[in-house]
Image (cartoon, rainbow, N blue to C red):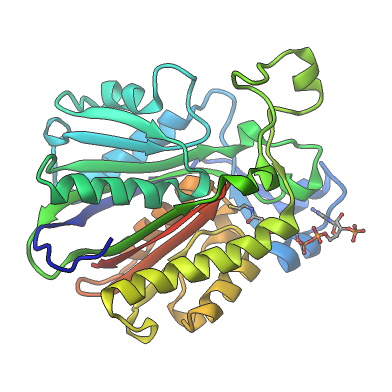
Length: 332
Ligand SMILES: CC(C)(COP(=O)(O)OP(=O)(O)OC[C@H]1O[C@@H](n2cnc3c(N)ncnc32)[C@H](O)[C@@H]1OP(=O)(O)O)[C@@H](O)C(=O)NCCC(=O)NCCS
Protein backbone atom coordinates (compact mmCIF):
# COMPACT_ATOMS: atom_id res chain seq x y z
CA UNK A 1 0.00 0.00 0.00
CA UNK A 2 2.00 2.99 -1.22
CA UNK A 3 1.31 6.42 -2.68
CA UNK A 4 2.48 5.55 -6.19
CA UNK A 5 0.00 6.69 -8.84
CA UNK A 6 -2.52 8.09 -6.38
CA UNK A 7 -2.74 11.86 -5.96
CA UNK A 8 -5.49 12.09 -3.36
CA UNK A 9 -4.35 10.94 0.05
CA UNK A 10 -5.01 11.57 3.72
CA UNK A 11 -3.03 13.87 5.96
CA UNK A 12 -3.17 14.21 9.72
CA UNK A 13 -4.70 17.64 10.37
CA UNK A 14 -4.94 17.43 14.18
CA UNK A 15 -3.89 15.34 17.16
CA UNK A 16 -4.83 15.07 20.83
CA UNK A 17 -4.20 12.87 23.84
CA UNK A 18 -5.33 12.35 27.42
CA UNK A 19 -4.27 10.34 30.45
CA UNK A 20 -5.76 9.91 33.94
CA UNK A 21 -4.39 12.17 36.71
CA UNK A 22 -3.15 9.41 38.98
CA UNK A 23 0.53 8.50 38.54
CA UNK A 24 1.70 5.06 39.69
CA UNK A 25 5.44 4.93 40.38
CA UNK A 26 7.83 1.98 40.42
CA UNK A 27 8.35 2.49 44.17
CA UNK A 28 4.61 2.08 44.73
CA UNK A 29 4.71 -1.15 42.70
CA UNK A 30 7.49 -2.38 45.01
CA UNK A 31 4.85 -2.41 47.75
CA UNK A 32 2.35 -4.40 45.62
CA UNK A 33 4.53 -7.15 44.09
CA UNK A 34 8.05 -8.53 44.54
CA UNK A 35 9.86 -6.12 42.22
CA UNK A 36 12.21 -3.12 42.29
CA UNK A 37 12.56 0.24 40.58
CA UNK A 38 15.97 -0.93 39.40
CA UNK A 39 14.60 -4.12 37.73
CA UNK A 40 11.72 -2.32 36.01
CA UNK A 41 13.97 0.49 34.73
CA UNK A 42 16.71 -1.84 33.57
CA UNK A 43 14.46 -4.41 31.85
CA UNK A 44 11.76 -2.12 30.45
CA UNK A 45 12.77 1.55 30.76
CA UNK A 46 9.48 2.40 32.53
CA UNK A 47 9.48 4.72 35.56
CA UNK A 48 5.83 5.77 35.93
CA UNK A 49 2.46 5.11 34.34
CA UNK A 50 -1.02 6.70 34.61
CA UNK A 51 -3.87 4.67 36.10
CA UNK A 52 -7.55 5.61 35.95
CA UNK A 53 -9.78 5.47 39.01
CA UNK A 54 -12.80 3.18 39.42
CA UNK A 55 -15.17 5.89 38.10
CA UNK A 56 -13.33 6.19 34.78
CA UNK A 57 -14.00 4.36 31.47
CA UNK A 58 -12.01 4.22 28.24
CA UNK A 59 -14.48 6.56 26.49
CA UNK A 60 -13.79 9.28 29.09
CA UNK A 61 -10.17 9.42 27.95
CA UNK A 62 -11.22 9.13 24.28
CA UNK A 63 -13.56 12.10 24.47
CA UNK A 64 -10.80 14.32 25.90
CA UNK A 65 -8.19 13.19 23.37
CA UNK A 66 -10.61 13.48 20.42
CA UNK A 67 -11.82 16.94 21.48
CA UNK A 68 -8.19 18.10 21.50
CA UNK A 69 -7.61 16.61 18.04
CA UNK A 70 -10.70 18.36 16.63
CA UNK A 71 -9.68 21.63 18.28
CA UNK A 72 -6.17 21.49 16.80
CA UNK A 73 -7.62 20.71 13.34
CA UNK A 74 -10.31 23.41 13.77
CA UNK A 75 -13.02 20.95 12.78
CA UNK A 76 -16.53 20.89 14.28
CA UNK A 77 -17.88 17.56 15.65
CA UNK A 78 -20.77 17.53 13.15
CA UNK A 79 -18.31 17.63 10.24
CA UNK A 80 -16.70 14.28 11.17
CA UNK A 81 -18.04 11.50 8.95
CA UNK A 82 -16.29 8.46 10.41
CA UNK A 83 -14.94 7.44 13.83
CA UNK A 84 -12.63 4.47 14.39
CA UNK A 85 -11.74 3.44 17.94
CA UNK A 86 -8.92 0.94 18.49
CA UNK A 87 -9.18 -0.67 21.91
CA UNK A 88 -9.17 -4.00 23.74
CA UNK A 89 -10.75 -2.33 26.78
CA UNK A 90 -14.12 -1.06 25.50
CA UNK A 91 -16.49 0.55 28.01
CA UNK A 92 -18.78 -2.50 27.64
CA UNK A 93 -19.39 -5.23 25.01
CA UNK A 94 -22.37 -3.46 23.43
CA UNK A 95 -22.62 -0.79 22.07
CA UNK A 96 -19.19 -0.11 20.65
CA UNK A 97 -17.07 2.48 22.43
CA UNK A 98 -17.19 4.33 19.09
CA UNK A 99 -20.98 4.75 19.36
CA UNK A 100 -20.67 5.91 22.98
CA UNK A 101 -18.11 8.54 21.97
CA UNK A 102 -20.19 9.56 18.95
CA UNK A 103 -23.13 10.35 21.21
CA UNK A 104 -21.05 12.16 23.83
CA UNK A 105 -19.23 14.34 21.30
CA UNK A 106 -22.15 15.09 19.01
CA UNK A 107 -20.62 13.44 15.92
CA UNK A 108 -24.13 13.26 14.48
CA UNK A 109 -23.15 12.87 10.83
CA UNK A 110 -20.62 10.07 11.39
CA UNK A 111 -20.66 6.30 11.53
CA UNK A 112 -18.59 4.78 14.33
CA UNK A 113 -17.06 1.42 15.12
CA UNK A 114 -14.31 -0.27 17.19
CA UNK A 115 -11.42 -2.34 15.93
CA UNK A 116 -9.49 -4.92 17.96
CA UNK A 117 -5.87 -5.09 16.85
CA UNK A 118 -4.27 -4.69 20.30
CA UNK A 119 -1.21 -2.41 20.34
CA UNK A 120 -1.32 -2.06 16.52
CA UNK A 121 -4.89 -0.72 16.46
CA UNK A 122 -3.94 2.91 15.80
CA UNK A 123 -1.81 1.89 12.81
CA UNK A 124 -4.70 -0.28 11.54
CA UNK A 125 -7.11 2.64 12.09
CA UNK A 126 -4.94 5.16 10.22
CA UNK A 127 -4.63 2.72 7.31
CA UNK A 128 -8.40 2.14 7.15
CA UNK A 129 -9.02 5.90 7.33
CA UNK A 130 -6.45 6.58 4.60
CA UNK A 131 -8.15 4.15 2.22
CA UNK A 132 -11.64 5.61 2.83
CA UNK A 133 -10.24 9.09 2.12
CA UNK A 134 -8.40 7.95 -1.03
CA UNK A 135 -11.62 6.51 -2.46
CA UNK A 136 -13.45 9.74 -1.66
CA UNK A 137 -15.98 7.95 0.57
CA UNK A 138 -15.15 10.06 3.64
CA UNK A 139 -13.51 13.46 4.19
CA UNK A 140 -12.99 13.83 7.94
CA UNK A 141 -12.11 10.76 9.96
CA UNK A 142 -11.27 10.57 13.65
CA UNK A 143 -8.99 7.70 14.66
CA UNK A 144 -8.56 7.00 18.37
CA UNK A 145 -6.30 4.51 20.13
CA UNK A 146 -7.27 4.12 23.78
CA UNK A 147 -6.90 1.69 26.64
CA UNK A 148 -7.56 1.22 30.31
CA UNK A 149 -5.15 -1.70 30.62
CA UNK A 150 -5.31 -1.34 34.41
CA UNK A 151 -8.71 -3.07 34.17
CA UNK A 152 -7.24 -6.18 32.51
CA UNK A 153 -4.04 -6.35 34.54
CA UNK A 154 -3.36 -9.04 37.12
CA UNK A 155 -1.95 -6.94 39.96
CA UNK A 156 -0.45 -10.07 41.53
CA UNK A 157 1.62 -10.91 38.41
CA UNK A 158 4.91 -9.02 38.57
CA UNK A 159 5.86 -10.07 35.04
CA UNK A 160 3.03 -7.96 33.53
CA UNK A 161 1.64 -5.46 36.06
CA UNK A 162 4.76 -3.28 36.02
CA UNK A 163 4.48 -2.70 32.27
CA UNK A 164 1.03 -1.28 31.53
CA UNK A 165 -0.70 2.09 31.77
CA UNK A 166 -3.93 3.87 30.76
CA UNK A 167 -4.36 6.59 28.14
CA UNK A 168 -5.82 7.73 24.82
CA UNK A 169 -4.50 9.38 21.68
CA UNK A 170 -6.42 10.68 18.67
CA UNK A 171 -5.80 11.96 15.15
CA UNK A 172 -8.05 13.63 12.59
CA UNK A 173 -7.46 12.71 8.95
CA UNK A 174 -8.54 14.81 5.98
CA UNK A 175 -7.88 14.69 2.23
CA UNK A 176 -5.02 16.60 0.62
CA UNK A 177 -3.35 16.72 -2.76
CA UNK A 178 -0.06 18.42 -1.86
CA UNK A 179 3.16 16.82 -0.66
CA UNK A 180 1.83 16.28 2.89
CA UNK A 181 0.07 13.12 3.98
CA UNK A 182 0.30 9.37 4.31
CA UNK A 183 2.99 8.07 1.97
CA UNK A 184 2.82 4.31 2.54
CA UNK A 185 1.35 1.76 4.93
CA UNK A 186 1.82 -1.89 5.81
CA UNK A 187 -0.33 -4.21 7.95
CA UNK A 188 0.11 -7.85 8.92
CA UNK A 189 -1.12 -10.38 11.50
CA UNK A 190 -0.27 -13.96 12.46
CA UNK A 191 -2.93 -15.78 14.46
CA UNK A 192 -0.73 -18.83 14.95
CA UNK A 193 1.15 -16.91 17.65
CA UNK A 194 -1.89 -15.88 19.68
CA UNK A 195 -0.91 -17.88 22.79
CA UNK A 196 2.05 -15.64 23.55
CA UNK A 197 -0.19 -12.70 24.46
CA UNK A 198 -3.85 -13.19 25.29
CA UNK A 199 -6.73 -12.95 27.76
CA UNK A 200 -8.17 -16.42 28.47
CA UNK A 201 -11.76 -15.59 29.47
CA UNK A 202 -14.53 -13.06 29.16
CA UNK A 203 -15.77 -13.89 25.67
CA UNK A 204 -18.14 -16.46 24.14
CA UNK A 205 -15.60 -19.32 24.43
CA UNK A 206 -15.26 -18.90 28.18
CA UNK A 207 -17.69 -16.40 29.71
CA UNK A 208 -16.75 -15.02 33.11
CA UNK A 209 -17.73 -16.89 36.24
CA UNK A 210 -16.42 -16.96 39.79
CA UNK A 211 -13.62 -19.34 38.83
CA UNK A 212 -12.31 -17.30 35.87
CA UNK A 213 -12.21 -14.22 38.06
CA UNK A 214 -10.49 -16.03 40.93
CA UNK A 215 -7.85 -17.32 38.50
CA UNK A 216 -7.33 -13.84 37.01
CA UNK A 217 -8.46 -15.13 33.61
CA UNK A 218 -9.84 -11.67 32.77
CA UNK A 219 -6.26 -10.35 32.73
CA UNK A 220 -3.47 -10.26 30.16
CA UNK A 221 -1.14 -13.28 30.03
CA UNK A 222 2.13 -12.85 28.24
CA UNK A 223 5.28 -14.80 27.41
CA UNK A 224 7.50 -11.74 27.65
CA UNK A 225 10.61 -13.25 26.05
CA UNK A 226 8.77 -14.60 22.99
CA UNK A 227 6.83 -11.38 22.51
CA UNK A 228 10.10 -9.46 22.77
CA UNK A 229 11.81 -11.41 19.97
CA UNK A 230 8.84 -11.34 17.60
CA UNK A 231 8.23 -7.63 18.27
CA UNK A 232 11.76 -6.63 17.29
CA UNK A 233 11.73 -8.67 14.09
CA UNK A 234 8.19 -7.74 13.01
CA UNK A 235 8.49 -4.02 13.78
CA UNK A 236 11.88 -3.86 12.06
CA UNK A 237 10.50 -5.62 8.94
CA UNK A 238 7.34 -3.47 8.80
CA UNK A 239 9.33 -0.26 9.26
CA UNK A 240 11.70 -1.24 6.45
CA UNK A 241 8.84 -2.34 4.19
CA UNK A 242 7.04 1.04 4.16
CA UNK A 243 10.34 2.81 3.50
CA UNK A 244 11.12 0.46 0.58
CA UNK A 245 7.59 0.83 -0.85
CA UNK A 246 8.05 4.60 -0.89
CA UNK A 247 11.64 4.44 -2.17
CA UNK A 248 12.88 6.32 0.90
CA UNK A 249 16.04 5.61 2.92
CA UNK A 250 15.84 5.39 6.71
CA UNK A 251 18.46 8.16 6.87
CA UNK A 252 15.79 10.48 5.36
CA UNK A 253 13.48 10.00 8.36
CA UNK A 254 13.15 12.98 10.69
CA UNK A 255 11.32 11.09 13.43
CA UNK A 256 10.66 7.44 14.23
CA UNK A 257 7.75 6.68 16.60
CA UNK A 258 7.72 3.01 17.65
CA UNK A 259 5.14 1.40 19.92
CA UNK A 260 6.21 2.15 23.50
CA UNK A 261 6.41 -1.29 25.14
CA UNK A 262 10.02 -1.68 26.18
CA UNK A 263 13.08 0.55 25.71
CA UNK A 264 15.20 -2.44 24.70
CA UNK A 265 12.65 -3.38 21.98
CA UNK A 266 12.66 0.24 20.76
CA UNK A 267 16.47 0.37 20.60
CA UNK A 268 16.73 -3.00 18.84
CA UNK A 269 14.04 -2.04 16.28
CA UNK A 270 15.70 1.31 15.54
CA UNK A 271 19.06 -0.45 15.12
CA UNK A 272 17.49 -2.93 12.68
CA UNK A 273 16.51 -0.15 10.28
CA UNK A 274 19.58 1.97 11.16
CA UNK A 275 17.80 4.96 12.73
CA UNK A 276 19.90 6.73 15.41
CA UNK A 277 18.26 7.07 18.84
CA UNK A 278 18.20 10.89 18.63
CA UNK A 279 15.54 10.48 15.91
CA UNK A 280 13.49 8.02 17.97
CA UNK A 281 10.60 9.28 20.10
CA UNK A 282 10.56 7.74 23.56
CA UNK A 283 8.04 8.50 26.30
CA UNK A 284 7.41 5.06 27.82
CA UNK A 285 9.43 6.08 30.89
CA UNK A 286 6.41 8.26 31.83
CA UNK A 287 3.45 6.32 30.36
CA UNK A 288 4.43 2.64 30.34
CA UNK A 289 2.83 0.50 27.65
CA UNK A 290 -0.59 1.99 26.84
CA UNK A 291 -1.19 -0.44 23.94
CA UNK A 292 -3.34 1.17 21.19
CA UNK A 293 -2.79 4.61 22.79
CA UNK A 294 0.99 4.54 22.80
CA UNK A 295 1.73 5.68 19.23
CA UNK A 296 -0.95 8.42 19.08
CA UNK A 297 0.04 9.81 22.50
CA UNK A 298 3.66 10.02 21.29
CA UNK A 299 2.56 11.55 17.98
CA UNK A 300 0.52 14.20 19.78
CA UNK A 301 3.41 15.05 22.12
CA UNK A 302 5.87 15.25 19.24
CA UNK A 303 3.55 17.56 17.34
CA UNK A 304 2.71 19.84 20.26
CA UNK A 305 6.30 20.17 21.47
CA UNK A 306 7.58 21.09 17.98
CA UNK A 307 9.63 17.92 17.64
CA UNK A 308 7.57 17.25 14.51
CA UNK A 309 7.49 20.10 11.97
CA UNK A 310 5.64 20.54 8.70
CA UNK A 311 7.47 18.76 5.90
CA UNK A 312 9.13 16.23 8.26
CA UNK A 313 9.07 12.54 7.39
CA UNK A 314 7.75 10.55 10.34
CA UNK A 315 7.36 6.81 10.58
CA UNK A 316 5.11 5.05 13.11
CA UNK A 317 5.35 1.32 13.78
CA UNK A 318 3.62 -1.01 16.24
CA UNK A 319 3.28 -4.61 17.31
CA UNK A 320 0.76 -6.34 19.56
CA UNK A 321 -1.29 -9.35 20.57
CA UNK A 322 -2.69 -11.51 17.77
CA UNK A 323 0.08 -11.08 16.74
CA UNK A 324 -0.63 -7.92 14.78
CA UNK A 325 1.89 -5.42 13.42
CA UNK A 326 2.20 -2.60 10.94
CA UNK A 327 3.77 0.71 9.98
CA UNK A 328 2.77 4.06 8.49
CA UNK A 329 5.05 6.60 6.78
CA UNK A 330 3.80 10.19 6.83
CA UNK A 331 5.01 13.48 5.33
CA UNK A 332 3.93 15.82 8.17
C1 LIG B 1 8.43 -8.52 30.14
C2 LIG B 1 9.90 -8.17 29.97
C3 LIG B 1 10.17 -6.77 30.46
C4 LIG B 1 10.71 -9.13 30.80
O1 LIG B 1 12.11 -8.88 30.61
P1 LIG B 1 13.11 -10.09 30.38
O2 LIG B 1 14.46 -9.52 30.31
O3 LIG B 1 12.59 -10.86 29.18
O4 LIG B 1 12.97 -10.88 31.71
P2 LIG B 1 12.54 -12.42 31.93
O5 LIG B 1 11.10 -12.59 31.58
O6 LIG B 1 13.54 -13.27 31.21
O7 LIG B 1 12.72 -12.57 33.47
C5 LIG B 1 13.97 -12.51 34.08
C6 LIG B 1 13.82 -12.73 35.57
O8 LIG B 1 13.16 -11.59 36.14
C7 LIG B 1 12.04 -12.01 36.90
N1 LIG B 1 11.02 -10.96 36.85
C8 LIG B 1 9.99 -10.86 35.98
N2 LIG B 1 9.28 -9.76 36.25
C9 LIG B 1 9.89 -9.15 37.29
C10 LIG B 1 9.63 -7.97 38.01
N3 LIG B 1 8.60 -7.15 37.71
N4 LIG B 1 10.47 -7.63 39.00
C11 LIG B 1 11.52 -8.42 39.33
N5 LIG B 1 11.81 -9.56 38.69
C12 LIG B 1 11.00 -9.91 37.67
C13 LIG B 1 11.60 -13.29 36.25
O9 LIG B 1 10.84 -14.06 37.15
C14 LIG B 1 12.91 -13.93 35.91
O10 LIG B 1 13.44 -14.54 37.06
P3 LIG B 1 14.23 -15.94 36.95
O11 LIG B 1 15.41 -15.65 36.05
O12 LIG B 1 14.58 -16.22 38.36
O13 LIG B 1 13.26 -16.90 36.33
C15 LIG B 1 10.32 -8.31 28.48
O14 LIG B 1 10.35 -9.64 28.10
C16 LIG B 1 9.39 -7.58 27.57
O15 LIG B 1 9.27 -6.37 27.61
N6 LIG B 1 8.72 -8.32 26.67
C17 LIG B 1 7.84 -7.72 25.69
C18 LIG B 1 6.63 -7.14 26.35
C19 LIG B 1 5.76 -6.45 25.41
O16 LIG B 1 6.24 -5.73 24.56
N7 LIG B 1 4.47 -6.66 25.54
C20 LIG B 1 3.47 -6.01 24.80
C21 LIG B 1 3.61 -6.27 23.37
S1 LIG B 1 2.71 -5.12 22.59
